[in-house]
Length: 260
Image (tube, rainbow, N blue to C red; front, side, top):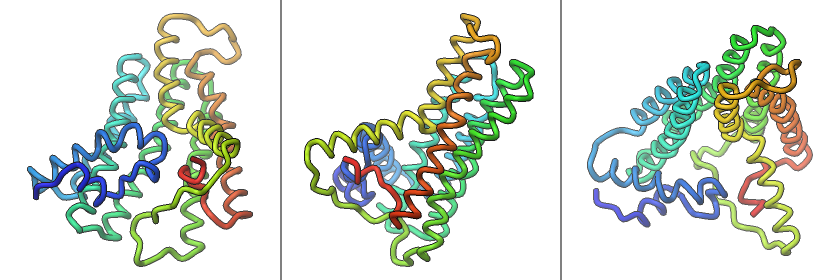
């Protein structure tokens, strides 16, 4: 099957606006090219790509449990590869017209398993680094916050009963906004991105290199990696609570594309 990049973008629903900031910068330039090659030159099935993505993600999780900065940095690369493959499996399925509830479920459940483990592994490394049981509590709060954020979305889908005709989220049109509201939305989106899992992992890698170079100035915290956990534990939990309140009061899930 010979496809152009535009064919892949259209079939895979990779519209620039729907993709949001991060995907607009990365996925239409990367994942669609991988998808085009896979569809054109291989018979690899979407579930096989999902399984590979899960395996890469678990290896990256183990890397974040290490104390050596370069191993942690490799874990960050593994995380991004895991995310990229996570996009590719769905794109391949849609381009070949073989989407299924079973495949979508397999794709989603691997994310639910993998993402919290990145935080848990990072906290485990800090616990071994400092031998401080308090860090296990901080790690629990951060991990629970990420899980709660995912539960807020999952429970909403269960509450509305889903839509048997839609395996993927519907495309959302860009709302008409004044310039001031548009920039306010961008600031909100930036705040979400700065407290997300990708940000946490990036800061953790930087902190791992700092720990290998300089001692952390605050003895009570102990290390730069510990400081990242202390900051993100309330951010992740607080962000999840805000999402739950928003979904409950507004009756809808806040989407990135509604901010832009």
